[in-house]
Image (cartoon, rainbow, N blue to C red; front, side):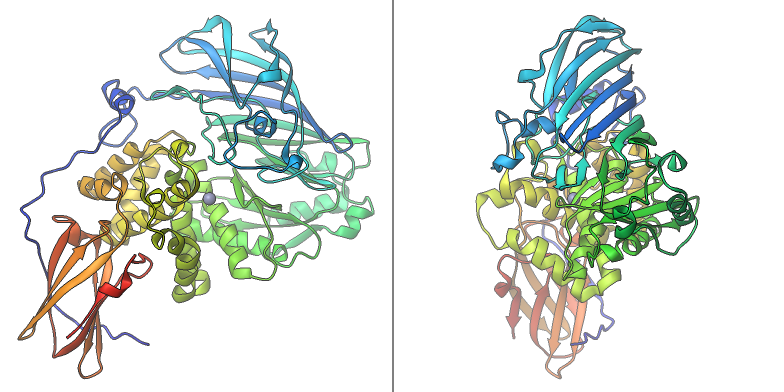
Length: 623
Ligand SMILES: [Zn+2]
């Protein structure tokens, strides 16, 4: 059905007096950050903002016989804080595999491992005897000597850990393919509002990491190819000439190049034939480093020209996997699209590599996706979503562990926006409604409607998923509708310019948008983030007098959503009038809308589009 849009005058009346400028609930430690001037109410980093960082030099060996990953690590850790540190906190997320770990959900016995074995630990040359037997995912090392404020120390560690047989975000994908993520112990974030990040990793929440520099050498047996975060520094040392030539060609062409086929992998014609090869990668100012290796995955590559650079785009997968055969093209498309449209910021890294696995998980410059060979629309949604994470959290440095909506919500909103380009508006919105919105809105349980600002680390199950992905994505899309594309993009870029490469909190996001949009949006933040709202409009009453129609709408669910009013005229014509969330600015409980009509109307319908209504039946009135 085609909807004809007619010109009409729109009046908005509300009964309430002007709402007073609202303030946002601010936790006490965040208030302190404003007092200390590390953050600012303009939304920008404060005059005294600081963050710590490390330069990580790692040599790691993966032994496919024993499935042991072992490494030597040298970290130059810069304490930019004004505090002397009496301890150092070491995170090793893969200790979530230990039988004793506190986990968010059940696992199979194939998931269990003995975890990290720390073989040595030195700080500025001083040896520490540490028994890592009882280490968890977050471990405090009491220091023999403080790390002074604004000083640098050298940390050296040797360690090993086994790859788990079952693979999710990391582990053994198949015999001969391994995904090594969170594969080294790292210094936790020490920040201005929480101090040391002591939250354990339980397998559900995601991560919060410093922006570090990485130089990594990965030692694997011959005939294993390695894909990793960062620039690949030494193809000539590890690849046979024909393969290296194809890889180098891929860096300068829009065509998809098959760098290595299954036949070549099996025929030992890909890597140099010394017993062990050392693959070298480098990435600066980035929040993590991961890699994958395989002795039989095929390898496709191409590149995409952006405004200021060419980005290498690669895929590694089991031969004959239908969706992965398209992956390099899909990656090229979305890196270009995200750069030019939404968020409209050039893809910030040098590489993107997709590896076929089981996780549907993002890592800086890498994604680990499950294959959906029989549904390309679904497969492509996964690629789009995971690559969208490049911006949130990898460019923006959000605290995913505590505020998952600051990354998942954006990735989910971006997934819809690019999906509309790829599949058409109707199909993309249908998928979004079915896959994202429906499960939440149709279930009235308390768990479904916890405030978005709730700490992700305190949520579980549906409460976690709804806030991280769905309500947050809808809040961003509602805001886009409210501000209009131009002003929304201006505000978004203001936020991104303020905080890329840094650690924003939700309040930094709120206030950056207020400043960027030149508008106090606190009523909107309060409505979407600090409430138990859901989506439920009710068209209570419609009066028609001459050519003026008054619609009395109750906002039963509370969220300030955009919606369309559809007028069905007696003569069969239809008219659609769009209302942005602005209609709720003064009164979020009920509004009276006045519309000018062009004749007798027989039915009025409120259409919320992707903002699905809990009780859609009361959104229509027959006259
Ligand atoms: Zn995600």
